[in-house]
Length: 434
Ligand code: ATP
Image (cartoon, rainbow, N blue to C red; front, side, top):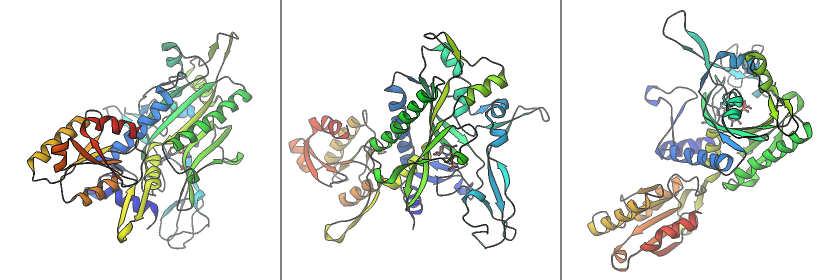
């Protein structure tokens, strides 16, 4: 089994991610996040927002609509050049992305392939109620343009000054030719982005480009992903997107293959210039210091929330051999990302005093932390179940707890157990969770 299959199986079994519309046979390229997955993904997005918006004085956030005027996509170049080369096998009719094939024959049956045809990735939709008068538009293919069309709104409604950024998290849609690799390539997915506006000066903008490259890499490191599984890949001149002056991907290594997780792009003034041209609205920035008007350059960091969630899961997954020959599966997720921070257990489910005290502890902790409850089976099984979903701490209430007012806290990674007084439990966890 490869890493994608292993994680897909754990994700389904433990409630992280399910195939979309599964009871109807599924819908290719769509996925539903379960009770554990929704917490993990939300934690990831919160960490992005905290580091990119909350902790910075030079970035603000927005949340733009998914459906925009079709003119946006004309201006951005998506209707013209947001496409992948599609080839079809003449024998079995399977379709492939030509740029992902090493050979020019079908990888399924060895048949001959058609010549590549450019296939536009934008997902069409229609707004309005009267047949024949409906407006044809698109579900956004990237969240980027929602930011650029609001550049002037943000300038005039807030106190931002260049250099500054606008961050956004939200859904994007692409008619991918070959969705696959679990959630890696989906048709509906979420992105987390920063569009950072700077003076249109090549030297200064390249300094910001380098700065954001490092910031984004550091962010992934800070959440515990293994450094040896991350690197930068530079786009060669002939690989650059239509808008880009320079581009690096942050790639993650899965089963010895490097895969894109996030892109850092120098977009020049492409977006603001095109929107100025197509909308006829003035998109220039007035520089109070130099008394000049200009179109800013844009440095973009564009990450996939689902891809990052998937890679954090793969990176955290370990099968450990324990003393005595036992094995355990453990997700060594950073505590900031872990769906549950702690699990609370009464040692025995049929002892009302134990259950009552454990419930009190659970109800007290849940006001501050995402915690869970388990009273099924034996303690060993409960530990294994929490290891598999990455819960950093398990708290057990036993008979001694009733007399001495303390409980056992078991650490996921070291499996060491501490006896902690119930009064000090919250500060103990706060210190450990950071
Ligand atoms: P790829 O080459 O893999 O198709 P891309 O270069 O087109 O990706 P961008 O347009 O730069 O990707 O999008 C930014 C980020 O959005 C990507 O790094 C990725 O994390 C995420 N992303 C893009 N397409 C998908 C998709 N189909 N499914 C899940 N995430 C995606």
